Length: 134
Image 1: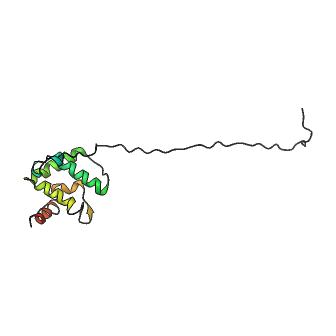
Image 2 (image 1 turned 135 degrees about the vertical axis):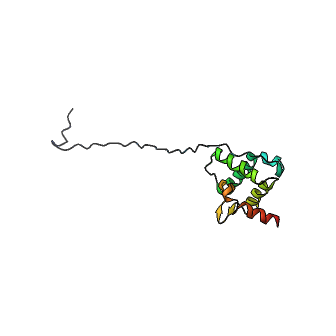
Image 3 (image 1 turned 180 degrees about the horizontal axis):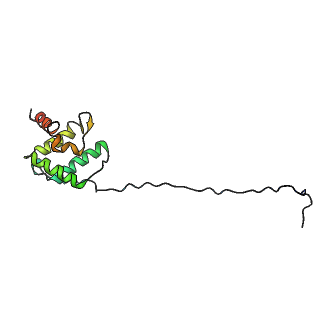
């Protein structure tokens, strides 16, 4: 049936409905390494292995400054060498002082794993050890 109320040539109105789209953005941050362990709590200062020293340092860094990029091979070399250079519990005493006395800051900068490298000894480890021996 025709509708004669509509004038000839009149444009018809087209209504289009828009359907809302839902966009969701999810960010996933993969863990490159498991969280550090706490086996260092069960050993005396002179008995720590390189991995126990690493676990302590990483844990303290993350507590104070948040997660940091990690490289397992680099960490093994740094902490093995550090224990070799500072025997008889000195390495552990230096690390503990760095976080418990200096609160994870050295020279107005947050302490990182690199602070335990041999190149930092004259400006970091030797200074802390000298302070501890006074």
